[in-house]
Image 1 (cartoon, chains in turn red, green):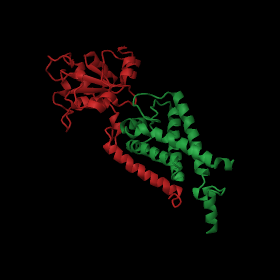
Image 2 (cartoon, one colour):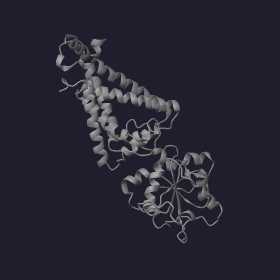
Image 3 (cartoon, rainbow over the protein chains, first blue to last red):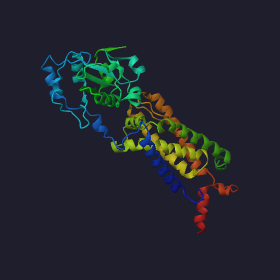
Image 4 (spheres, rainbow over the protein chains, first blue to last red):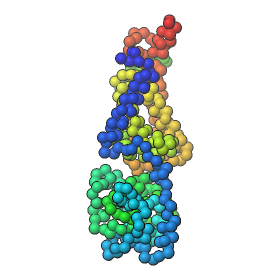
Length: 201
Length: 165
């Protein structure tokens, strides 16, 4: 067979086989991906200036997910500006300043990294829901650690920062479960630690 | 030297080693497009619209080309594919090293969070170059099995055929 095909044609044939196999496997794989993702858009922070101002101007904005007595929705989520077509409230991608502010107002910090990394150092008081362990196994189930919590409580997901987008994907999983005030801190643990903010081991 | 490089033993050993490395390297990536796409993104080399499609096609490309090479099928084509892949990987690795990027290599499967240190990167670059040399030897010196008893490489046979016509 190879007698009749030039190297270039053989390579082309291999390429076509790989393309067909790749597309098929991606379609059936539980870890498949869309053909295109706008990563630049995905990793960009949202404009949260007005939210930040609103929080700074009030002392009432301190919904903690563990506080199930507080029934008022947090300020910015009153008229659901981020309500998606799918019916969940889109997580907001925030920077250090707002993450710090929300942290000081008792937001629940969720570390999306692996348990080993979580154990080595984390934002003070953070809980660990490892994206890798959670997303591919039981993402449609409420994690035990979030059971019974106030769904309007403020949650901040983070991972390592930089290119790490596990916090973004985890935040969407959590938002789809009905949590209304989910945020993603893009700077992640590295930036947090470097800024001298509270950490623990 | 040419005789040595084109000898059956050298050729078969190289084919099996390089083919096996590629099949092994593809194995973990074949079933985890998500993690491999993150690794590809980390190299900051491709525009957004090429990242996912690269993560979808590269693992089966490694697998098929590696398997073919191991069994001596389509040796020219599979070695060309492997040379092309290794060249792209080399560019990715070298630029990541030079820019000091914090990447997850994704070389033998990706695990999302673990980072590759710059010392690891140098090892990967070295491995890549070795494999590349091996693949070039296969491409340039493998003899067509239809001319088993003649001391010519495919390229020389092709050249002589062209001369005749």
